[in-house]
Amino acid sequence: MAFVITDACINEKAADCVDVCPVDCIAEGEDQYFINADVCIDCGGCEAACPVGAIYYEEDLPEDLRIYMEKALQFYSNH
Ligand code: SF4
Ligand code: SF4
Image 1 (cartoon, protein in one colour):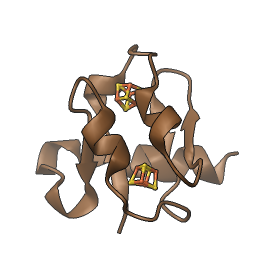
Image 2: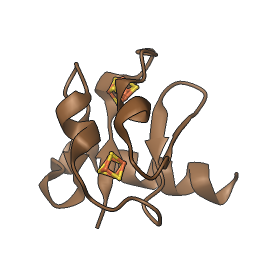
Image 3: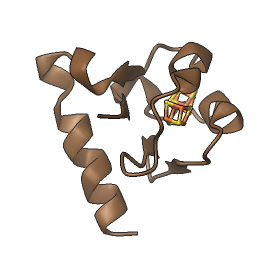
Image 4: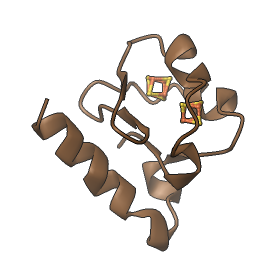
């Protein structure tokens, strides 16, 4: 399990989440930020810090946003 960044993040580049992540597992992609699920320790800090509510715990991810989990996996498999 890990936290997932979704569509509300797209084109929002303030990156408050990056500043609070204790394990530095959030990276900038082309149009949004992504969390590395292999490194995330589920602290929830980023979820609390995101001003637009883009971050969900994987288990709480609404069905229509599950694609963002795939997007993150793809991002980290290419980097
Ligand atoms: S704080 Fe939220 S909106 Fe800002 S970069 Fe992180 S996930 Fe995206
Ligand atoms: S839950 Fe914690 S460890 Fe995981 S990405 Fe967010 S701030 Fe980083």
